[in-house]
Length: 239
Image (cartoon, rainbow, N blue to C red):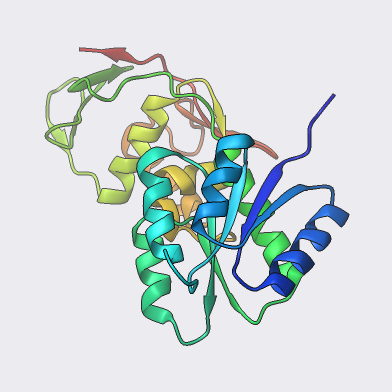
């Protein structure tokens, strides 16, 4: 039996948290509510929460401080609720680890869409196969020196990689043989800065293919999985 995701709504305004709670329950989520940091921590001790919706402006410990504390101890996805005038707080929230934010006033269906998007990008990320603490990796005739951010072929000549290409190649090396969706690749390479509907990952893949594929038009290393995303088909060895 599949258990529906459990959302924790933290807001000091009773009407907001209760209305959100009722709305999310109608859309098949389990919901707990809290009026501040003390109640939030109590819920987290007693329940397995899948995502936290966290208001910034609250009396006592504010949402920024609570989000920072969550990031130090958990990997729980966090969506911040912010007032329209709090641009600085929104930036700080994302910098300390919030996965997204919604500005007040907002439509509940907007928050619902963002919850679903964040959960797709975080809860579906696959386990990592390779340990990038190693300095060098080999696949086919290529060697990647992670510490030096350098890719070289059989002739040992370095191939220049942009920052985006390097990050993308590291992701593929870390997950060989696993189909990665575009959203997952964006999450791994760009983290919280990634836009939900961003398709720039396709351009990055195309550029990387031109550098490592024998025939970029018929790729064998970075394979397209129709309807799924991309798969790194090479065997990866650590050196």
